[in-house]
Image (cartoon, rainbow, N blue to C red):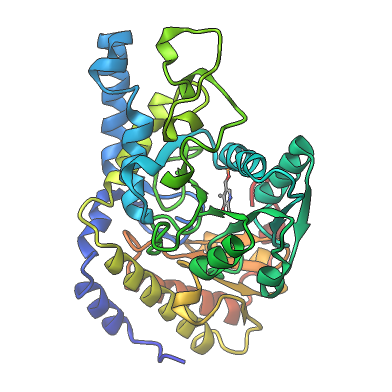
Amino acid sequence: MTAFPTLDEARALDAADPLRDRRADFTLPEGVIYLDGNSLGALPRRTAGAVADLVTRQWGEHLIASWNMHGWIDAPARLGARIATLVGAASHEVIVADSTSANIFKLAVAACRARPGRRTILSEPGNFPTDLYVASGVAATVGVELRIAAPEALVDAIDDDTAVVLLTHVHYKSGHRHDMAAITVAAQARGALTLWDLSHSAGAVAVDLNGSNADLAVGCGYKYLNGGPGAPAFLFVAERHHGLLESPLSGWMGHAAPFAFDDAYAPAPGIRRFLCGTPPIVAMAALEAGIACFDDVAMADLEAKSAALCDLFIAGVESRCAGHGFTLITPRDAGRRGSHVSVAHDQAFPICQALIAHGVVGDFRAPDVLRMGFTPLYTRFEDVWRAVEILGDVMERRAWDDPQFRVRGAVT
Ligand SMILES: *Cc1c(COP(=O)(O)O)cnc(C)c1O
């Protein structure tokens, strides 16, 4: 166990942090320690201006000419190329479109159809709900079965009947990070495709899609990419599959020549065939502002800071909060986790609410998990130090044991 530092030592870590100036790119409310950027990224300072410009000048003054004049039509590919640099992909292999859920559907159907005769989609129990729900919808759509195998049994469960292995790279609850390269090798050795959900990885840890020879991936725009609530998502298709995989949502924006207005569908040759309808341009402007926060950020710095922030929190829970019934469920090895740390506690819900009332915003994940997200661009070591102090205080005083902290809202 790493020793928990003093406040001055935590501040010294901030002073030495190569990413320390990036926090100024975000608007963060006074008096709040925000440890939920893995659920909804904080608001970048440049976003309001970028969206206002898009609405008032581009839309307001230039109207429909903006599709060409302001590059609206190119936004899905332009933003995709930017995200590609964060996930180890080539610029023409990533595009921004739809939601993560819809992108899972498009790519999983495409993958199953590219592996005809194979009868299963393989995933893991406790995967993010939408991944499992969409996978079962895909299974019904293409006439295959969804098979679930525990993480330790996954590789052995891949067989000649597996069309696609659908996994979340960093688990949303436990924070466990799969070995993308090893699982991809195992899947491909059996002739299966891999589809990685990067929602809790992109912008949080270094991801190397091409270095891992991944086939397909999707990811979320509103978590570590700071795109705002409900931001468009992204998808990745390795170049070797371009022209072979087809989207089941064959909308006009994925057509080879959308403005030829042909009756017959002919998919675009490259990644653009995975677009469906007209891109949400206002939301795209916010996402572009969110991704711009990564300009000049080295992924190695991001990954190193993420690891150090998580280590600090773990050390704090295990020293300052020892004896209060927390069980660490996130791997200790930084290479095997993402950028959040989860602890189980039978009173996790009221503890989480009490923390929020004391200015520490993390989140609760049913049934008993308290999850703290550490966003390397704007979380400071001092924030983690203070969060641990407040958690220790809430536990010592049993401040969580109050009826007001047991009331559950629609979103938890
Ligand atoms: C957040 C998240 C999603 C979100 O999907 P939406 O379609 O944007 O609601 C999907 N998968 C995982 C693993 C997530 O963490």
